[in-house]
Image (cartoon, rainbow, N blue to C red):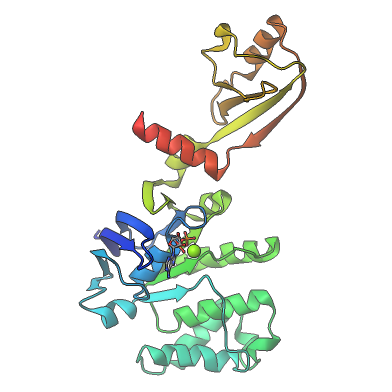
Length: 309
Ligand SMILES: Nc1ncnc2c1ncn2[C@@H]1O[C@H](COP(=O)(O)OP(=O)(O)O)[C@@H](O)[C@H]1O
Ligand SMILES: [Mg+2]
């Protein structure tokens, strides 16, 4: 099946000279949830804004559900719903009128049945006559989604849907996104939370400094990244790692006080037991040990390292 969004060689250099995107090639499949994962400043919003026609690309081309975003902007934009990163709503309007108005902006004929369906799906129906200023934070977010869906788009962009959102609301968002996908909408979300990408997405694209480093099925990527680290605080600092430990995935901190061991969570044998035994034999004592997940930073190091070695 042809992809629903086709991104070819899209790059962006802002007038300030900032290179926000190096040439990006990406195909989004119809019906999937795609997560664009990367730290702040990676270029996520820039890429989304280009596809939605808010930012002009420097080079490249994008086709959204059969419409070229430059040559057929109106056609492509009518297929796209966007929930932006910056939240803003018209405080004094009612839910019903603000969502209905959004649809009108796309030159679509009124369709109260669709607006009703959307509000019901987002559990906003009871609030349809309420002024937006009276709603809770979670409901305001849902109003933004309802606005983005008002003109029956086939592609929905959610830019950092859960940044700065409490845990409960985050779970609610995740559930909602899955339900939207059930209804046939293709969803592209951006996030800097690994857990969010892992939980939500079918496929994940990792972006860093304007470069799309890798695009993979979630399971494949998580297997590659599914590393944990065991951190050992040593009783006495080591000057260097003993040669007999060279084969192990160990790293000695600069001050010689901490040993970090990386292991694969999914591996049948993590290698921890033999490592600890060997440390004992070498007389390397530790006063504390704890394990931690690899961070987004670690992941980039792994990916970039993996790509060049
Ligand atoms: N309007 C703009 N003018 C100049 N630089 C910008 C503009 N918008 C974003 N940038 C820069 O482009 C880079 C990517 O930003 P952005 O796309 O917002 O990243 P992300 O959404 O991943 O945090 C950053 O270095 C940012 O400072
Ligand atoms: Mg952003």
